[in-house]
Amino acid sequence: MKKIVAFLFLAGSILQANCQGFLKTNGKRIVNEKGENILLRGMGLGGWMLQEGYMLGVNKEGQQYRIHQRIDSLIGKEKTQEFYDTWLANHTTKTDIDSLKAWGFNSVRLPMHYNLYTLPVEDEKLANQQTWISNGFNMTDELVRWCKANKMYLILDLHAAPGGQGNDYNIADRDPSKPSLWDSPENQQKTIALWKKLAERYKNETTIIAYDIINEPNWGFEDAEKDKNGLSEKKNEPLEKLMREITAAIREVDKNHIIIIEGNGWGNNYTGILDDGLWDNNMVLSFHKYWNYNDQNSISHIIKYRDDLNVPVWLGETGENSNVWFTQAIHLLESNNIGWAWWPLKKLGYNNPLQVKRNDDYNKIADYWNGKTKIPLQVDFYKTLITFANNTNISKNIFHKDVVDAMMRQPFSDETKPFGNNTIVPGKIINATDYDLGKNGFACYDLDTANYRVSGKPGVGNKGGTYRNDGVDIFREEENEAVYVGSFESGEWLQYSIDVKKTGKHKPMLYIASNTALNSVQFSVDGAAGHTINVGNTGGMQKWQQYVLPEMVLKKGLQKIRIKVLNGTISFKQVKF
Image 1 (cartoon, rainbow, N blue to C red):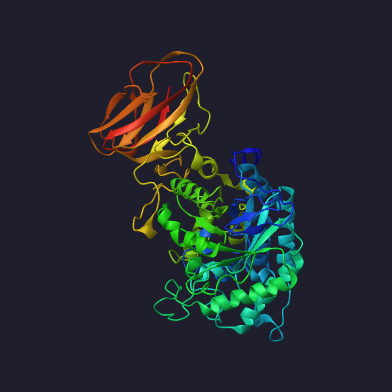
Image 2: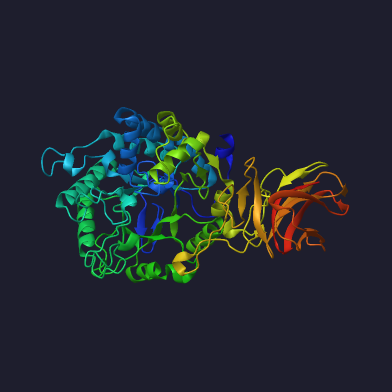
């Protein structure tokens, strides 16, 4: 745990949160009470109050209510409640917020599920009645305390609105058999009442800086069949109307907090919404950005709104890509004075700061839920699910320092750093996967670095999907789960910063595998002419063979070695000195 909390990166020259007084908008900027520019560097707590199926490895009907029903069918109502109590108690804790602060983040976005704060409309005894639930408010109070202790900002985000705000069902835990937010005046009134209740409770709380009033609306108001997610919507009248009503209700009790609005089509389609200008003098426009190029054109639409309306903009949600993409995106955003909140802090996947562990028994349950297998009767469902809920605790998470480094240091630094212990003594082994921390082209070079599918260039990044989140392809061995670099192809290279304790002669040995002939690999030190070795067919991509390089002198001190594939495709496991 100490390693997680203590892994500290410099956050640059941007002012950090001091949480003394309310933040306000001032033209195109968000500023503190001194008028100083505040650039938000945040993390979204996705998966805590609202489970999205993909975060749990559930790809078929991944809405939380469906996951809840499936768990209930396996272990019963009482134990299902125990599972969710355990989940909420462990998924996000003070240590998570302490760690975010230590890594350099200055803000947190809380994705809220309305059903932790109030009953669904169909469960209310009287029409238009609002029954309040203490659980969500108490959790929010506790998060406020954790953020306050770390002098971090908090943004409240209504991620799942009553009835659900879109046709992307998982995002808002929407049950399509019931009226949506847009089909039900009662759901709209409950949404307005919830925001007024939150504003009443937190009107004087300076740790909370903004209300993100409807997350990612995606609804075809004019043509629900052809444009179900509202990407081509030209008027957006129901969305604008509801956002204005929410704002008015908040302002009845709270004049202090910033109001954040999002367009249709997952947050980006503002067409029609702002034709009459802004309706509040303390407002921020949010947009979301996924899987597109990180060039100026990719944010030109929101920059135009910022310039035309003289209003701050904020990237409220992004992520789910490679470290290369993360570094590019943050450099682009901060160069344009746009703050951001990444998504999410943790899930089963490896491309976030924290990874939740899974085991074979949980995989069997997930396969059953995904329709791949029959019910795994040999699995202890209760034990497996409670273990999984407990595994969401940060003390049991896998920390990906490469992800944090890509976000907090690499956007404005070409420097490379050792990934692990880099002291070289006789017998020292460096795993191939422990190449330097740094940008592609500086710490490593890989040909497929990120997924830009929205811009027409699909990619994978790490084809093996484990250990690190750079473009480098990392796999696990079938026999012992050891990690290695695979699909290591012509033109790609890896760099390792080493610290030689004593000048001396070494014969580096490379452990390589290939299922083809005529491969060649170069080993070089500090850019000097390298040694080339020829690699034949070893009998498979996990059939390791030792290749010994000629004896060489390594001088005392810091130096960099590179392993480059000159021809062919290999697997690379380790180098031994």
